[in-house]
Image 1: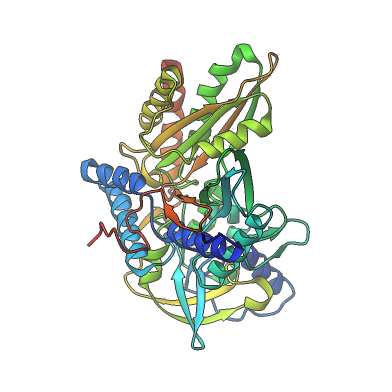
Image 2: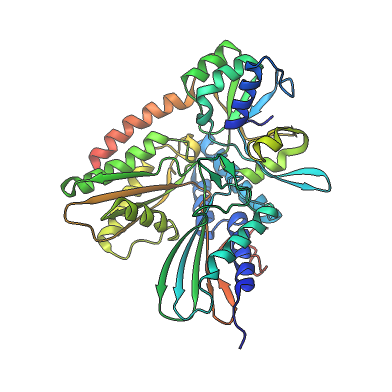
Length: 305
Length: 168
């Protein structure tokens, strides 16, 4: 039986990075398209039209959707019997360097103290990798390139428990109002309540991986997601701040159990060009993309003309 | 011509030392952009080149307009009052290009005429001079009379936000 090695992984990660940078997830595309069709305000409609044009050009030419190709985030569910472990991050780094060289990624990793760009999207703690070790012999990967402009409004609120949900709701509205057009709305908002600030921010970021429209399994949380989504869309900030019905594409909420005395609220904003992909890699080296995009690199799907 | 954070700093430093800039910027459009660019057979090709957040340049833009004579700024997200005043004083405007639309922008860039400060600042921060055609959509949000569309809009949205918070 064939076994997966570092080289195979590099190849898979490279394909995932290319897909993520050049083809928008299908759920994002469909939401934008639906909004374009029903939008009546001319300036907002024009923005949505430009966005859809951009997505189409990027897809057809195989070029990045946005020149800010983001910071690479990787979330792994690593089966304990998957043959490669320590080599995974190295394989991702090699793939990132290659994708940067090929023009699929802009060099975005800057040493904050030496003010030096590494030139290849790798550096200290970059890519940022989150691991969960699970049973089995497969590796599940979620890859996200998170834009810098849309990271600016991301906020941590350390609340007391009694004020918690009030501050959460106010915090979401305030964040979107405060930064207005800067993070490139329509936005996806990731929120998490947790025991500590680090957990809250991390879970909020991870919640962006959930496709648009997919509600939290908990009914009460799902209800709050919809409530906040509707509230945000009443703001009429609209695409790039030009008004209209669509300020947020979705709101995602996650949580960890909290300490009795803490109520940390993480709020993460993501732009209309939310770029993510996921894949499953088996121990024999076979793999498939589990995320849907407007265009797949293997050529099997080509929704745009 | 593109310039973002570091090219602004570099240009003002150069002028401050009494030296001249690599190009005469008078009458040009300044684009807040850090492109993805690739050199193919000795020719630069722009792969993605949407606008970057203009507000980051707010602290230096008024002086930049004054000293270079640029007539149009293209970016995203709008700018603040200091820039609005400088635009009015220098008879210039600010336009928004759809944020994130990097592939669309690159399609409208027909050629790279020059690139300066590439060695010192790297690809995203360098000063690129582009030849463009039908570059847009562009929406003027700050005019040469001191009007600032986003400021008016954001005041409205802030008020609406306060109302909405009471409903949830």
